[in-house]
Length: 265
Image (cartoon, rainbow, N blue to C red):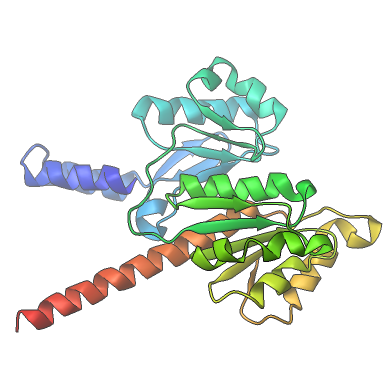
C-alpha cells in the first residue's frame, strides 16, 4: 500500500490528479470491507507490515474473493495457515498464486528483497518443528528479508549446531524454533550477539501440554535478552525480525543524513 500512496502523490505532483481526489482516497479509503472483516490498506504505510489473512477457520469463498480483488489490482496479499478447505476454495486461482505447502502460506507474488537489510537465520530443533520454521522463513522472505534456514540442530545432538556456528555468526537476526523441552533458544542465546527470537511449538509428548512447556522454558531462559513468541507463531516471529531490520535501516539512513549535514557545514 505504501507504493500505492507514493504513486498517488507522484501523480498529484505531476498534475494528473486533483487535490480533492488525493484527500478522498487517503481519508475515505483506508479500509476495504469483506465478509470476513475489514482490510486495513494503510497498515503497511503506518507500521511497515502489510495486512495478511489468518485463513484458518475463515470462509473459503470469502478468502477467494479477497484474492480476486488483490490479484486484479496487482497487489501483494499473503494468507497464512491455509487449510485444504481454503485451497479448494481458491480453485483454479492457485495456478496464478504461489503456494508454500510446508509453510501453509499462499501469496499473490514474491516481492524483491529490501536492499541493506541484515539476514534472518531460522534455526529449528527437529524435523517435527518444520512447518512452524517454514512459516517463519517464508514470511520473512515475503517481507523482504534475506533469509536462510538451519534445521534439525536440536539439543539432542548439539554437535550438529556446533559445526554451524560460523553461519550463526554471519547472520543478522536469529529465530529459533523448538518444541519438546524448548531448550535450544537458551543455548543459541548464550552463544549469539545478535537479536534472538524464540518460537515454541506444540510438538512433544503429553507433559509438553501442547507447547506450554517449551513456552515456559523460553520465558525462563537463563540466556538474557531473547524475545519469546506465542506457541506456533512463526508469522509473528518473522514480523518482529522485519521490524528489527526496518529500525536498523532507519538508524543507518538517519546517521547518513546527519553525517551529510555535518560535511556541508
